[in-house]
Length: 209
Ligand SMILES: Nc1ncnc2c1ncn2[C@@H]1O[C@H](COP(=O)(O)OP(=O)(O)OP(=O)(O)O)[C@@H](O)[C@H]1O
Ligand SMILES: [Mg+2]
Image (cartoon, rainbow, N blue to C red; front, side, top):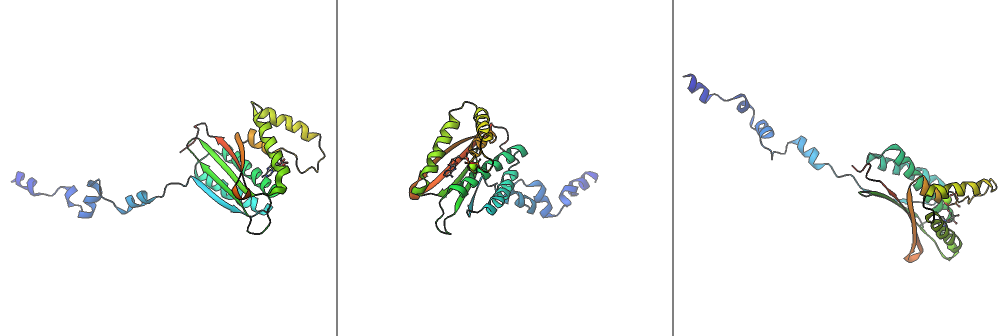
């Protein structure tokens, strides 16, 4: 008799409702909770921002980039350094870009790769920008000519300290990007007179998640 009872008695597990049983016992069951996890979108690895050439926009881009970088769990120091890189490149875009009509904007692209983060700032130029493009080229070559960007930074600081205080072109921005941002600078002028300046920072495998 007891054997009979045992045979016909539903175990605690079996007394659960059909839905519950499937939820816990069937590995393929897609409960509501499971769906939430499965439907989570992968984190965006890059953002593209369209920016008007005004100083007010710099703060907005700083905030949006900061939020994007932090969402990838990058260390605070790295986020701060990259935010500085972005600010310096946008400032240069505002100062030296050629914006002839309101439709002329800058584009800022941030991309988080497996081992590098790339910041690109794109702005229109024309033949009047030749003087500054030559300076940009020289500055980048000069920085690259130093094995340690810290040396370039110190050299530049010494020069700047001799200049008048109101000098707007202190020439510190790019060297800060190289040293404090640990970034390799490059640029090219594409078709339709579009300047693309990029700064590539090595993550040294420290924090890609
Ligand atoms: N986006 C750009 N378009 C054209 N020329 C540029 C651009 N960015 C930099 N340059 C040229 O390269 C020079 C060096 O740039 P850098 O940012 O190092 O210094 P700065 O803008 O002169 O001064 P700071 O950044 O310290 O205010 C600039 O003076 C300018 O002539
Ligand atoms: Mg600058």
